[in-house]
Image (cartoon, rainbow, N blue to C red; front, side):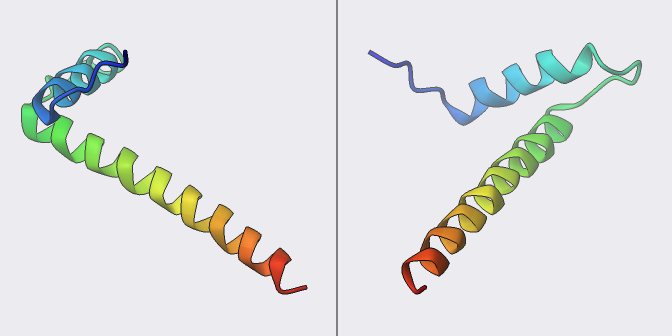
Length: 59
């Protein structure tokens, strides 16, 4: 069964990944913003794919 992560767990994981990429100390707020940006990024990709599917269905 898949593990469902809480928002706090996801923020912690994001910070763990991105902290190793910078010398600056990242805050939980930084992690929250990065997580929101990732979610928005994938929403845009999903919207583009849906638009592409809808466009093909109208041809």
